[in-house]
Length: 502
Image (tube, rainbow, N blue to C red; front, side, top):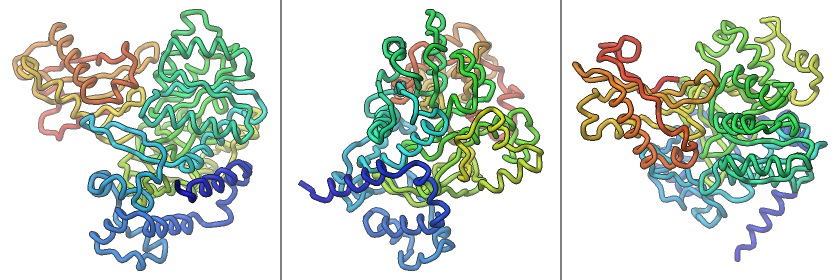
């Protein structure tokens, strides 16, 4: 028996349960986040053997890192140079895997799982992200709420983590009751209709395309979604504001800024940031003013825009990509996740919008909103990375597709070049699309498209456990399009090829 564990748990739980959300998010004004991240660095040096070894390999004496400027010169951590080079226990506090009480799994590019241990106290900062959504967006502190966890259950990060965080809120006193059908569509529809009438509102938590499929299936069967005052917690996908409005209308939602919220999360460290009524209001304005969005973000596409607590997850940028530092079962310092995006301070964001003649706080108040206006910084994310496509929350890798094209007969038809992307059909359902370049002299045919789609599906199921467990069976078959060799739109001659398209 380890006496420190219950003591550490009691202290952390007591602080979480007894600290109101306003106070918990208000500490940014008291302590600079740079001091918090420096304290994290010192704690990781003192307790994590792998990080001490990493610094030694880099020739960096820890005691030379005294200021935030010193911190910013620390080398970046990645899966390749850190996580894969050290035994799992060495990555944990005190070099002990049993310092954690739960291990979650995420798929790698070859289907080999990455293991993410954590202790119950590591869930509490993430529970605060859920609390922010449930309190500020859904008013769940004063409304009896049914939380329906529709993320996949099992060893994967999303479902169990979400259920635990929602239960922490219930323990804190929120009138929230949790039910966990996972990504079983029939069970979701059953529990919503059986339990929903006993609550003032029902929150569906899941990946955007899957929740839309649940909603559409329910509508086809006569489910009166507006009866349950549906709210949505979403994760894992960048979606349009048109999609938000479209799905909101189907469940009878009337206030887009308060009826849904997206989480920016990663298996590596849980939820890093969350949409707020303020960030949604801003994003909807930017969706209507693409030139303003381009000036702000520097790209002709609209990213996910969330706010974050810099004392919980400290963001920095590197060459147009994001890195963060945060405590967890595996504490991470300047961890490079390669997501394309950036950071914008609260004051800079509001000043920029003011120059465009837009006041989001005033806009929210005009629509009766008083919650969700907090002076927290913003982080924007275009996608998981340049090399993956997210589909129903599963990261789909080009390497998985390559195997499907390298099978006998099929490899005689194609060059091996392809473009992987997700699209929407006329009913705004997500579709996994693979555009494949035909070998010279080979002609398109329905027989070839079907054979390639079947091969891709088979090998995605074999190689990618997230695809196998996250994506409903009816959405697993990719939509395959075959183009002539050298197609100027997808495979221009003489141009470096990109295997994914956002």
